[in-house]
Length: 101
Image (cartoon, rainbow, N blue to C red; front, side, top):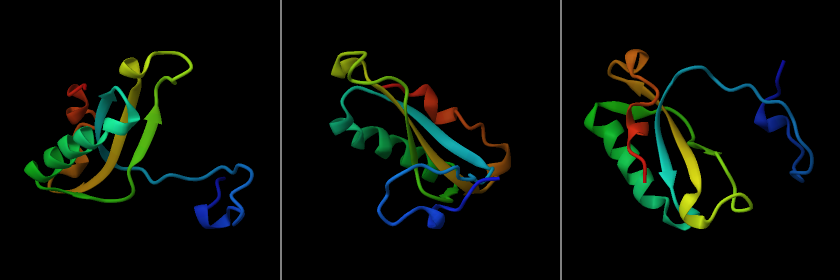
């Protein structure tokens, strides 16, 4: 069983298992510098709004590789935005992920 984020030490030192809520998410894979992720965020937020969804929690970034492995232009970061709202239960989690920058 996981812990709530509130259970983490205030110092931020250490690691803990956390439980994430189930649900639908809009997803986009950003290609390139971390400094230029704003355009990918704007794209996925527009996708959410255009389809009548609401953002249902904090965004998450999954780093699919690292600067130690590839040049900055080849960095891949998946951005996940939890959604609810109109037909959120049937929304494919990767619809926006087809847009790769």
